Amino acid sequence: MGSYICVEGVIGVGKTTLSKMIAQKFDFKPVLEVVEENPFLSNFYVDRERWAFQTQIFFLMSRYSQQSDISKMLKKEKIVSDYIFEKDKIFAEMNLIGDQFWLYDRVFDVLETKVEKPDLVIYLKASTETIMKRIEMRDRSFERKMDISYIEELSVAYEKFFSNYKKGLLEVDADTIDFVKNEKDFDFIVSKMVKSGVEF
Image 1 (cartoon, rainbow, N blue to C red):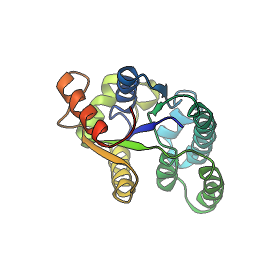
Image 2: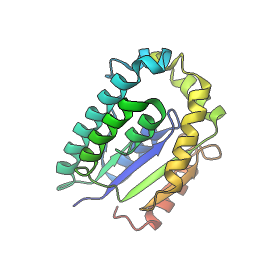
Image 3: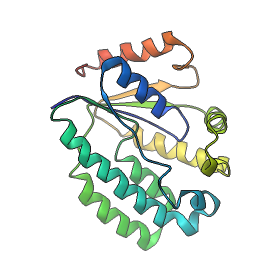
Image 4: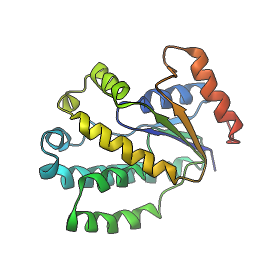
């Protein structure tokens, strides 16, 4: 089995960028989350209650499909991904209520047993202010109406999840480190990754 690394964090924190940089440096195969193809996402950011279930189920099936591919790919190569499968449930717990979450949770529990667990998760942490600036800079059309309170709520949910995450976790303060503009900052992350014991 090849090594499997994931980069995680709140929307806009830099997951995809760091994943691509890691892939290039270590010759890992990048597996990037498909976000833009979700046909319900732009409506969700306007009316969360109305569109939450459709949005979440689409993401769940899309992510599971990618995870199935990862299981096959790991037999012959090393993988870096810009998300972990469990992130889907982080969002579901925020956005779904009542019977919607009950049904979602039953499906998720079945699918989760079939996906590979990463050897290392790099958790990028940043303030709401930093995240909102980065979201604005990348200017995705479906994120333009995103409420700052949603990002704040999501940050709390991520903190709660990773406070209980036990296997292979590297936390990075993305407020003080700019791995895109500063090569030394990227090298710092790389040094921490190497010390983690994962095979590169």
